[in-house]
Length: 440
Image (tube, rainbow, N blue to C red; front, side, top):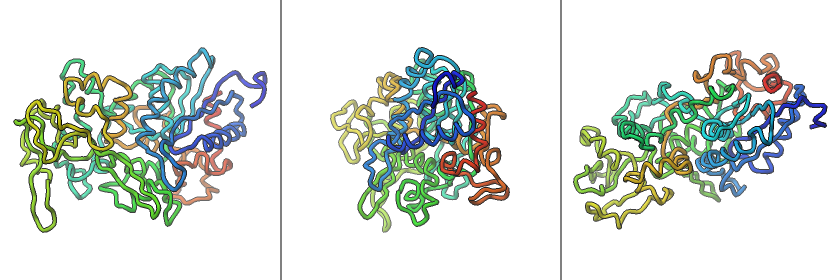
């Protein structure tokens, strides 16, 4: 920025979010630096780039979001190692955007990152990660047939059967690490470890809520590059990717096919033959004019299932097994993972499952691919895990309402996911003044 002698001796770090290439990261960092400088920052500015766009070929596709989540967890210990006092002594503020907040949150929670201020902007993290006892938003985040088809949030299959609740079956098994396979409370301590500010937008598009099963148009707009209205690109992307867990979505371009989501856990149903002869079948055979094949049984047909059975043979898609196979008790020769599931997925349901779940890399993969969140993201909502004064609704607090160049909802400007950098500085300079106040 300028010689250290002209600065204030403090540090300000910036992390970009998902779907940002290395070249784009440099451009965004430059824009952040200029805006902070215009607002009077004298802190030493450091931009942090991370691999948030995996498997992106740059040609009308979007990168693998769930792999980006895994990369965020992998990056976290490296961030903590670099930013801790030895290399950057003194007062430190971190500003992160969108999925970049996953990197910082994990670094603080899991790897001892020590910073003074953490400014979360448009955080693409479920609120339950910061406070595990928040009410669930079943109506907007659960899918049929687990819930009713009318988007009311009426539960059809007992939540004991859900992948999001599988962790609770291990709560009373002493020391079993499978109890950690939930988004609830993953970052529960960060508000006690540093000063966290949640800069959210009540008019979010990318982090916006949408009920029920997403239509093909919604999926395409969320993950696509081409749309009839460029203004809707990316809308509902966070919610759609949560619903894509166990419920893989395909986006077809005339020249390209893009897949988002996974084939196991999540909202998938177990239509497999059980490994143990005495375990129940969760499916029934249907031969009708409209459908021939296996179909999940009704809750009444499934009946009561013990915790012990659900631990090894869940009602959700387990990620391994045969359909029409000849599996017999204690015979695993035919067991194979579904496409995209980890090679060790069968062992998750065995005596080895606790050790597998204790491994940070395995846990982050399961969280990103197989365990859905049931609360909305912090970046679109007031989040009670943080004190009221540290929740900042950006369109209400920092937008120039009188001269706002985009649309409004009533008196509130519509502040979209990237507007902290895409909207001209003259309309949102108050946000940067706040960053400078906190970092100085």
